[in-house]
Length: 552
Image (cartoon, rainbow, N blue to C red; front, side, top):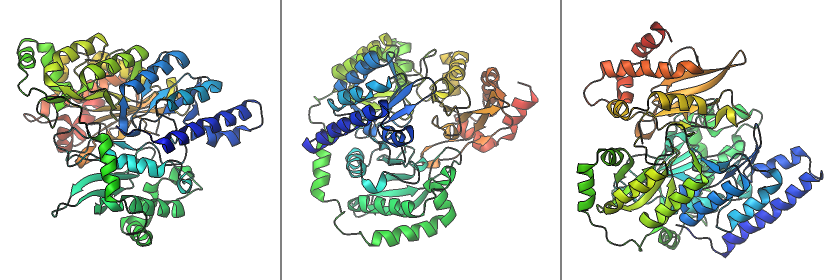
């Protein structure tokens, strides 16, 4: 993984000193709240419903074991013993004390971490595929490009006060595991017929109040022009993006207003000024950056792994875990393991300090000391030898992180909702818990097969409800918490926004509504057909008829 150089470390250290002074001036009354707000936001500090919340960046979702241990230490000493991993590969501490946040940032800086630009109208944390660098379907590793973009965008004066927040994702595989079409800019790896490396660029995607699927702005962008082209997009957005209405300030609205062709012309005109100029990324830069992410310390792994094969044959629980939580690695002797943060009874995405310490130990024993954070709010060990899978499974079970539900109904993506967030209309966590409890039976989940359930407490869509196969949105109905249900959303190369099935439901009705949706699927599916494909084939009507016709 990337290691800070002297300049990086000084920048982060200086930022801590600066924020410590800003905090002191705010606490003694020399800075008014309106003056302090943009300063704290660009250091990841929110004021939530009950307490301040600190959002810490995990760039492109990659952590070292020692960094995860530091996060556990912060959770234990400065919070209430846990942290919440988000859909954008950050971690949030929900109960910090305002006056202690500069101390937390100083401790983060000591392990090359920070909270810079995790909020505010700026370029946020750069995200990517959690399997990057190891996936069997990968064209090339996107992490070096993520780091180049991170360095370019961090504290760039031109992009610190954009019309609205701005999100960038870069994916390297044939399968899009980074949801690039739902970002302000999404870049997907491409290799031209002549061998040139580049990206297909999407623009104007996003969720929230007005969900939109990003559109292809450029089918092939040579990699050396990545920053020049991104800068051209951002300058057009900075120039024309609305600042009079925050609900219409995202780039997706600008693309819609100008049309894709009109926006593309503006970008091409802007790019013409910089194309081929000083912003071109040199080949040596690519080589130097790639060296940070190339693992040369992994010992050979046995592709046959007889003990692993024997455990698969003799232990059904282990075999189920492998089926759902283990993915193919480009090295046949290794595997990619996802540790589920979705055990029934635990808030989705939450990890205790003890669990974080335990995962750090597992990563050092079995995963070359590296951890990834997925946008589905789980943790990933990307370098596990197949012969170590039985021992890793036992270790994960002891931590409560071996639920074999990755990609199944109870692998719920969920924001903290009204239990914490001051913007939320409704609570998310209790509804997610009710769903997990209702459908905890693994035989039933395995029979249903892959199904993504996403839940948000408000229209800001931090739980990505729009792209869940089943989506649940908390709404305010006469000052009471109700939940709107959508079906048919999906990410990936066939990205789609879910459609509302009808009037909203009370919280206690949601598990029964989901049950009825599943009954339609199980009755009408073709052999081997996934839920999302059945919805696409059947349309909304049979699902609506069962849900509303049968009563709730």
